[in-house]
Length: 421
Image 1 (cartoon, rainbow, N blue to C red):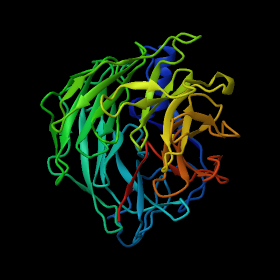
Image 2 (cartoon, rainbow, N blue to C red):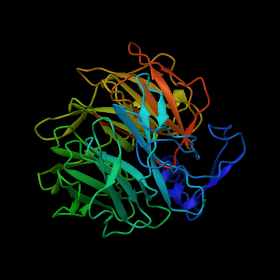
Image 3 (cartoon, one colour):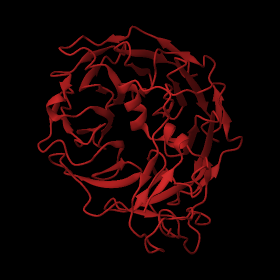
Image 4 (tube, rainbow, N blue to C red):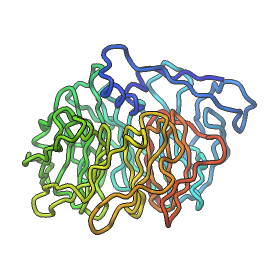
């Protein structure tokens, strides 16, 4: 059975195709139409799933069926994974945001809840607020997250918030990113060459445009804020740079001297695309066109230098790096591949930041478009196509064990995890 998902939705939502467009230089051909094949889910027996997943009030009594099967009420999770449902109407731009309770073993259980928004990319501020960025309407929908082992979502007053920007065009790759200190939300605009910065009201979650927004940045797709909140790093793959900004408490960003990527044996191989900061604040990692690199951060100036052994060329693995994810301990780094050659993993030296390939890499997993570690356990949630897959992480070696059962849940967005205690 097949469910076709709206082209425009996945044009902005499934990041792997954005990356492929960059690599291949595709023009106005539009986004590919995606489909998923599945078996019967709870509440049905095979065939195309035709009902959306509206399950009633979060944590309410009873259960309901839909694209992702039946939801379960009266759960008391410690952690909740959120993602957008796949809408029944394949022309719809609105869908429910699904809450999944994460069990002690990392398994997912669909909770009942009916918060909805324009389908977009999700970002989390601390464990307090969830934001959904829709590039088509240039809006950000905001929700407060209920704690006390709930995870229910409530719309933030004033939501959705309008962005005074446009994100049209087949060569634009906008993303939403969050400040680790919970102060700011960032929207990158590749085509416009700028970053929109919003201040976050720490009480209500309401968004206000920062005084210096938008900020000029060449070819921004992704960005990372190091844990102290002092510096913002923005890869520029077209010019082989990592732009470095200082940022103050109001969200004003000041460009510093960028890190210029040295030309390697194969020009362009080490041009950075996606970026991740280590939780200890000492290191930074990039997924490049044909390599993975680790950098040491100067705590005073924010300047970067290569860690020993970087960049790590991935051509021998036949892997074209795409996304990065560090496990909860910062010990293991995982890399998705734009093709079908799996997920390589690296150990991270806690003193130098040097990367060492984990035995058995790359691990099974074709064209993963999102990698999200469980903050509280040895699991990695891997989005393959529009399915959510739960991998186990060996705490000693970092080796990944893929799921032994077919994916039960499906998503029209990236994945985020909140602690809701």
